[in-house]
Length: 418
Image (cartoon, rainbow, N blue to C red):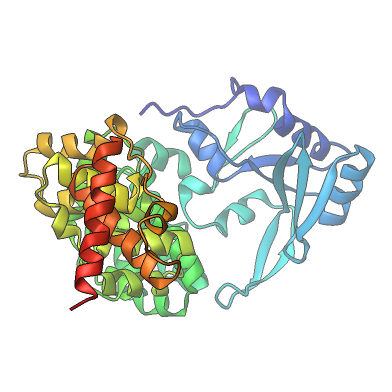
């Protein structure tokens, strides 16, 4: 990864919505800069996503200038100095420079200031403490440039103090290292995370969820999670066993199938063996309904998909739907380990790309015409017929379908005479 120390060639600083925000902030004795992750990513040659700004101007002045420029402003966190400006449909957070007056966890009392160095020193990691002005000059008050060059994630100042300010920084340390670091985690930061691990219990499930799902899709997720487990941190989050091998194998399976990383799929490989695990994790991390259902499905009898011919696989695809079939199959694949021959797994996993299940062609009227009355009995007969149709491998020929209907009615009638 190439690292630069100037952003003078960054086009988004010269034109477009971010440049408009900078122009708004850089007038009448005030200064604005881009700060945080956008600067870090640009210096590392990575995609720049959200762009945040810091400014010497107080929030009321930012709002006044936005109104004069006909730019929408939203006081999203005005008590902390943050205003969101919407330019060309894109939101940009603008925060007035701050200094900690008193810190007690996340409820630090701050005062607005004009000192860029002191504002940088209250951030979490050195690589996130950089700022860039409208000319592309990078300002480094905390040693972030050298740490970017070394791909080292290091707390600003005393790691124990930074963590005590917000215990979520423990998870962020590993997540940022997984995404941007190289080699072993910074030793001082790692040991501070271990010392502060009891503080994880104070965090909301929603905040844990957000960081864990981001960590799971980072490039160095496996190594970071191993370090967390070795430090006694992962048990506090998951509340159960972590499976290193299946997670590694799941990532390999995603690569083999050319799939983008999926955080819930990886979470299932890491922490779910049975559905009880899935329900515990869903509660501990307050997963969304969609995420919880995906996780639960991957914990449900995945071992039955370990050895299948294509006829069985087609029936599973019909019952589960292609996405859940693939996820559950990949769970079985991951549990088989890295030593498993990937070819048969890949062949079955890609079956939905070659075959789409037809709709069940028999209808209620087919059985009413054969003397089955509407009601619970009709629903039961339809279920028996559908099972027979699946066992026959999805025939669509009218003669075969008629035979299935006749045999189903005969079986139902015989069984209910006994």
